[in-house]
Image (cartoon, rainbow, N blue to C red; front, side, top):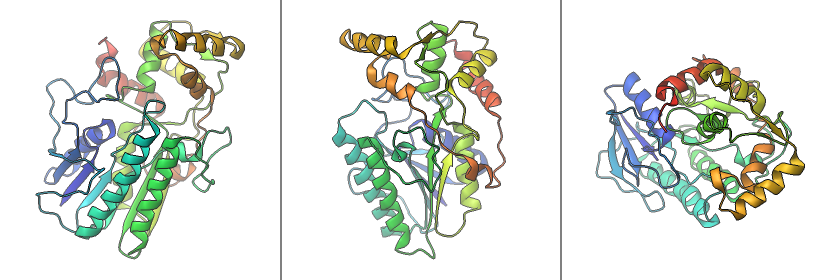
Length: 338
């Protein structure tokens, strides 16, 4: 059996590859990407941290593949193979609108066309919580999506493209769509890493509120859940929010991170009347430390995602939230690298 991972060089793809090699050592794993493993990703600014440990190599076969174009591979492909579609432009804000649509929508079309051509019956698609839109209300899988960003729109359309592929042979095709909250783990180069260094260097403050809900999931938990659903898939299309239940507030996340990593720095609270003018001034100065109005607003809006369906799925979590933070910290050599 072959596993094809589009975007396999990325954060989630790397962790999935490591898990697949652990549980299916005999399988062929193909990394379909435009970036070779070990190469700093273009979207990551500043110091890039790899999901791989020093000296570790990715246990997959790299094939240069741009999902924006029809997919043609010079390897044997069978109907028993499985596709994990992770290829995406996702950092927001940060890209021209066109790039979200070009990669996320056209990429979905080409991945599904590849599956169609070869009779592949199983796809796991990593979507996002962005299709829900920005609102404080609790979002369940049945909540009407109301995306308000080009990224969110592109991901919702991509979901529909995959669903159309599945519906063409609904009795035989299996589609799992996951909508992860904030995904953290070694090599994320994102929210949790920025938060840790923000606390440590006294550059993070609660921006106008402490009760913002930030649904999140540990990357090792996310990829294990994907494999679990492949084995326990119900007929048709499965859609899961992927986050801890209940979701945590930013204050809970900060306090847990400080406790587990040994940080003692005080985290101040800055009222909204002060933080937004400061963010605009920072933007005019070139956004030092990444501070800008868009990022502040993003921190102020809850990602209030319900994880009850995942919790009731029978999947056995391997880490509590606190244990996940400790494992993430240890994987990063206790974040001693600047």
